Image (cartoon, rainbow, N blue to C red; front, side, top):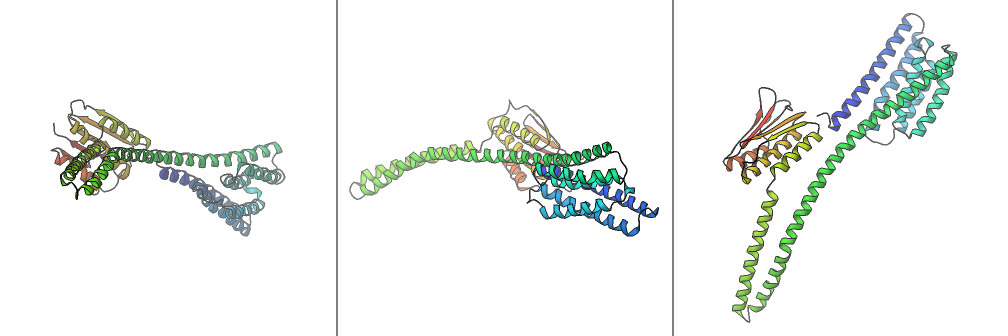
Length: 370
């Protein structure tokens, strides 16, 4: 799914790697052409080529360090900057002033994603002061055009690179925010359940403790009264057990409508367009609870084991179907979650199946007894 951070990271990084590789190949062919025409000596062409390729090779590591929020790659940036300065002094006029701009702009882009913007601006001014005279006096370019070209390259390239990294960090933060919301919801539910158990058992256990202690003291003096106290202890324990069982049963039960809405929001947050068509008015509470479990487990299976971009959920006459287009690779045997769901439905008199279809989709089908 496109919204997953790792996939977005790979797309952004590989796209930039491809652009750098394209520029490196173009410069290599230009150097080969100039050498073949006799404009550039072979030794100088090799030296310039090695310097340019070295800078291009360092840039992907600088970019990945910025993506991973590692410590600022000061050493790598320094080495890349030295290589850049040496290479632009050796680049022959035959390669054109745009070569100096690209080489300088690329290094400045690596700097912009690793240091505060004020530092990037200061270095941009220094680079312009170096490359503009080269463009004017070596390539005989008009000062206005030289300034315009340098401004565009030394501003647009770093800004585009900074936006590229900002886009990735935004995607990552959004994903982490969604995960944090899920963890918070689970934590809140655990706190609610713990609070309910405390309220249910706190009073009962306190009374049981007091009456048990009283019965122990009375056992040697008044056996009849001690037996009466223990009888009350037994009744209190039975009542507390019934209350706990009711609380656990309520905790285990799921609301089908709420589960459908939650699953739809979760799948869409993960990048899968989800449609829901459910007719559930004629279902019994037990049937609704079973289908709610099936919907939850089906969504979990999609999130963990597929690359779905769309999912369709339908419920009609007690039959649930969840279809998604996220089938990837050979299908493994049913996992423990789906296997447990199948056992739950079968024990209740329903049916369950989950497999890939001939159309390339994955279909989960659960039917509950009428």
